[in-house]
Every structure is written in C-alpha cells, then in structure tokens.
View (cartoon, rainbow, N blue to C red):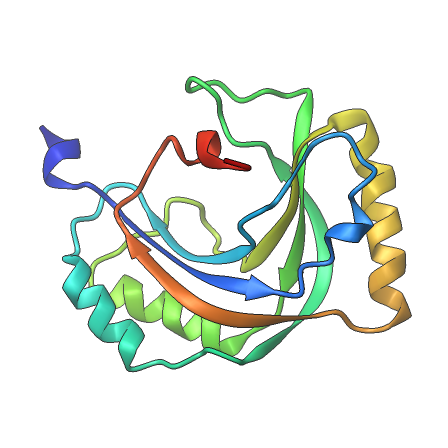
Length: 170
C-alpha cells in the first residue's frame, strides 16, 4: 500500500558532451541516455505538476558544468541483488545550480534515496570490477589534460521506475 501511495519522484537533466570515446573499448554498457540525476526519491509522492513548476522557474538549458572527477559506483541492481563483479564509471560535476535545485526539491517533499547527493553523469555501466581502477586512472588523465564540460539540455520529471536499467540501450 505504501508504494502505491508513494510512487516516487525522479528528476534529471539530459546532457550533451559526455565523452563516451573514453570508454568505448571497455567491456560494459555505455550510457546511451546521458543525464545527471537531480532527485531519485523512491518513497515520495510530490505531484509531478509541483515539480514541473519548480523546474519551469529554473532554466538550466544551455548551461555548462565542469567535470571535476571520476568515481566508480555500484552497478544497478538486477532482480533486487547487487552484482559485486561489475561497477559503473561516473563523471562527477560541480554545479551550485544543480545542488540548489536538488535542495529545493527536498524542501517540497522529495527525499533523495542515495545520500549524500553527488551530481554525476554515468559513462558506462557494468564494467568488470577488475578493470574499473585502470579505467578510472585513464579517465582521470583525460580530465587532467583540460577540463571537460557537459551541457545541460532538458529536464525529465517522472515517477521512479525501478526497472530503468532494462531500458538502457533500447
């Protein structure tokens, strides 16, 4: 009953400029839907219209955000269980506008399911864990050569879809 009354809120912003060439030769699933998650709130029930109102007042389209680092996160769960043999390589970004928007969504009732909030764009999912350290070093070397920027495009405002990983590359 709780899940039906609290379908969750998912808010992201699509990005352009994700340097997929850095991981194109790596085993895994490159991100064909580049985005930065702003809110993943599994148990909230904020009306989508309320979120849309907040988003409309914050035009981020065309804004560029600097890539500040690279991290390895857990891969998305399949059938509820994490697979410890694979990880995701993500680019962390620095943006006070994204952090402010995340905080505003919390003030209207969303509660981020992954604390602390770290704005990032995933480069590749399901990389064999024994390769992630080398991939991270390679990407860090590229970041050090000159800053990489991502351009924000359009917002996505929906209910949480816990089967989202199945829709990748489809």
